[in-house]
Image 1 (cartoon, helix red, strand yellow):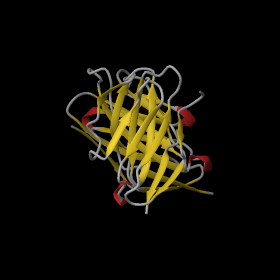
Image 2: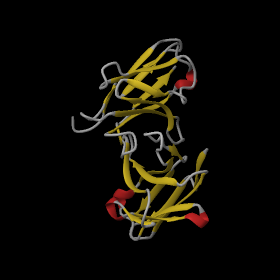
Image 3: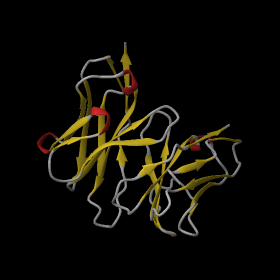
Length: 113
Length: 116
């Protein structure tokens, strides 16, 4: 596609509910990153994929967060048993290689009520 | 470890005035430095980046930034503000990707307000 596409754009979840956020990277991009942007803050790194391999998950805040990219293209970020502190914009970025310019999607705004 | 400090959560300028957004970084290795712009309900768009070489880098929309190692700074400037520049700006740092990839560490952002 022309850019990184994320869906849904907005998600409201009740506390305790599981959610799944989708990212479609730019076609051919090997690298995929997830970032979390809390209100009034800059984005913070969550996890990194090279093709289907999750090479870095050091930023995932708890074991309730899980990400996958099974075929090396589309990625899903799953949050189990959502908490209010999970409310944030989740940004996905992809790049041709891990050290080249990353292109960001519009993000998914998650609100946990 | 790396960190970024952006001075001023909000900066207000008049249309046609100089824009100066400040960014200081901390890095234990030679840094790569970036400025991103974020419009409401949009993702991040890269304005410019410094990796190696010339310390004055020019980006899109008339913005430029200068890497000053002695001051650990990477301030963003534009000679004349336009109404369309109103947005949030993020400075970011990453390490030289010897591991084959690099993650970005962002500042908290500066909201640029432009008045007529």
